[in-house]
Image (cartoon, rainbow, N blue to C red; front, side, top):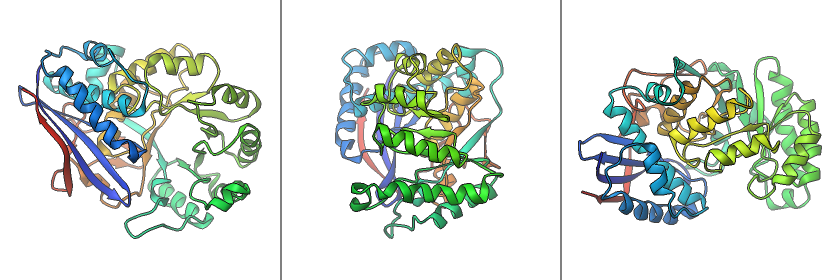
Length: 385
């Protein structure tokens, strides 16, 4: 396969959020898609610069498979999130093309290549309500405990049995300086636990807000509220040894690792007891085929230590669902809910989520393409061959 052209599109979501979609077109006119959205928008220029650099490397190459592509793209690899995102996006879009060229859905392509057996026909999702509580186009939204409860109830009513929130986000500087955010964050979770503990399971993402001592104290309070998923109280990239100590002192599961790249990194996180559950993100970890290789490697340790990180758009969710399906993963997949009312319409055919489960269509590849009738702009395009 040779590549003919590349495009990067931006689809506006709300406030500062948009979804960046990478489109690769082969000389056979097969289109492959991936999402390359980064949480740090300041790195967007660096991301696009990395894509430009890497596509030049691929311009004269006959691409045969992901293994070859991985070796080529990693030849002069930089350990930055933007570079990892560029590599992951290119690899994922090519994998979409590979599966389309074989005229089969991506989960079957991945399963046949790496796993064997039968992929799952539907995927359990957990509802990340945090995106719905971020500022929208009209400005900040209410983040009181009642708002957290309202969104949790909305997720329950739509059939989700597990939700995740980020209760320690969104406070003013004073609350962080005097640690008042800890009490207020616990209050956000407490109301959900008090009202819904018999109906839904709650996960908590801390977004690296704590030091070592506060991490252990906060987890104790959360565990007493029934919270057994304790995600990134400290940054795994900078604070691995502290996380190992936290893991040894808490009752719940220590979760994280969304910004790491490659099989070895994730294997080490589990094998060396830094985390109980790792969360590869297909946008950062090396792409769709790297993600399934991570899952297979970790199965040798535990069937319940792998859950894909995906607070992202429908293209990313589609790819992540196919990987989860091919692995027959025991843990649910993350899904950002209620971020915008017409989310499902941003892809064709529309995203199909029923009673908290991702339902696959019968299309080849990732099964979805961007809906270009939605407002978008081209950030970069290049004719390759």
